[in-house]
Image (cartoon, rainbow, N blue to C red; front, side, top):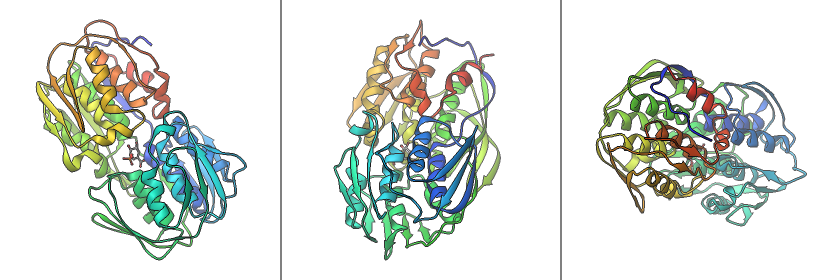
Length: 421
Ligand code: S3P
């Protein structure tokens, strides 16, 4: 796909629903006693994989545009799937399902696409095994033999909401208390939604305590726009000349807003308006305007709060004066692709001064760049970041596979070009 260049961007945009919350709403809705209605559901490929897996376990789920209705059958209402559960490109579906399926009275097999089959699952299967789970393999396909589980105390070795959530979900089925200690706080959508549904869960700072739960109350869930999708327009509106973009109804859960902190620190003009809480999740409208950016250092406990935004933050750094250093981000290596390697290799094609490090990258920004034929590695966030990078490059750029944006943002290119003014 040839990336068309725009001179400037202006206007209002609404990004699709939050991916993490959409997954959780379907999963917890399926386990609740009765009907959960989800508004603002992200109809991206990853969340559709979650729907598909639960349908295969006997859950009726209706879809009408971005409203999804899940007819939950209770914590013990899933039935044995007659075939392998296919999770596509979705790490969240795969890892969270492990937590739910480990304690079921039946066996299941989970697998996904080529990328999923290369992503580490030991980080989930190991703690689940300590709880009594029996899971074959550390990479997909995973064969899960349902077992009776018991609580454990677990110190998280990596900041990962997927691992944390898998343990919490298994904890709902376990005898005794499950205690999870995080080193750095990762996204807490599971904890918030479970509390709203009446689960036996308590959060005290970095410690989460879960006890066996008999039932979950169904909810009407309104999913705010995904800040990880809004991030692309936050950067676009900042780096393009004479531009201003308002992104309406974006989730600003504090465990997700690292990009706002970093962009402001880099000099971005960002205004947050109409703050409100819906279903325990904070949301607001975000306005960004053309800004002069400067380099910064990004490391430490902010990393889990912006982990998915690092490719687009790296894009911002290219147009920022001076040096940007990203450290402590080794988790990027096990995302949909190795995002450290992918960003560095693709940015180099555009003549960018960028160096790969073991846990991040160093970018010397503020220099002219040129277009290139970019490779996305089938990674949605790489594709969207490169499309934005290409806007300020001299000459033309192409993407080998633009379709992969369907994973989290099927209407990305329509929204992107719709902003040209
Ligand atoms: C997610 C957690 C993060 C994030 C992913 C979604 C979630 O992954 O990168 O896109 O919904 O829990 P990790 O848990 O591996 O950090």
